[in-house]
Amino acid sequence: MSEFYIGYLPKVPAVLAGFLRKVILGLGLLTALVALVLVSAQNPFANSTFEYGKLRSFEGVVVTQPYPILRVARPGEAAEAEQYLLVAPGKHGAENLMANFAGHQVRLQGQLIHRDGRSMVEVVPSSIQLASSLAAVSEATRDLGPVTATGEIVDSKCYLGVMNPGSGKVHRDCAARCLSGGIPPIFITTADITTANDTPKGRGQFVLVGPDGGALGHDSLRDFIAEPITLSAELLQRGDLHFLRIDPKTLRHDGN
Image 1 (cartoon, rainbow, N blue to C red):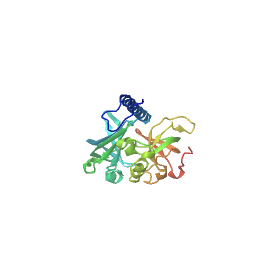
Image 2 (image 1 turned 90 degrees about the vertical axis):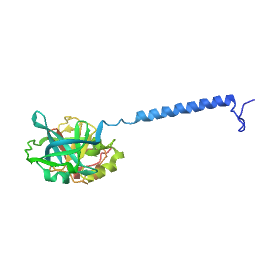
Image 3 (image 1 turned 45 degrees about the vertical axis):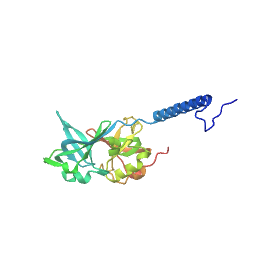
Image 4 (image 1 turned 180 degrees about the horizontal axis):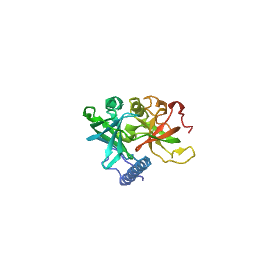
């Protein structure tokens, strides 16, 4: 006669109890396996850092075009400088913050943001102090010629470390607000950029500038943020910074 459970009995029959143990163990193992599969399928977090709450001191020359940048001299290398993109707290660029310091040597404090060799400083507004009068800014911008690049437009602050991930459709709304606030836009490539004669020039992060080499309008890229896009541009270089000079009116969504 088959065993069956009667609710008022103090114990479940042995055969039924053994069956239930196997079912529960099997479900537990299946749940763990599904969790492992889902975790392994996720993209790993980028090696990006926002040193939130950790203030560092910086001293260098302020450049305001195309976007606010602090040029900090490297020890023993008079002609070279580390270049830090500057932003204000929150979803704001540092245009207004640094406008009166163009070409001046300043001291300031801020929180470091960095990823893949590119660094940014979120400036503490009250910390900016004039260190000297006008300083020479000798580094010229080189035009490296026309290129074709495929990738995605993101806001530099989030992508470099404040948000993780700082790219893709999941970050689209946040990036749109940051760019509207004056955060410098950058283009992250998903394939090697190529020159006019199809010579590959590698991948990387490229600061986007307008046709005149200056800052782009805050909302000029709104329809193309976090979308796969292929663009034609002029590749520019100033020190260790690379720029893509584009005309937003010519941008088109990738057919794929």
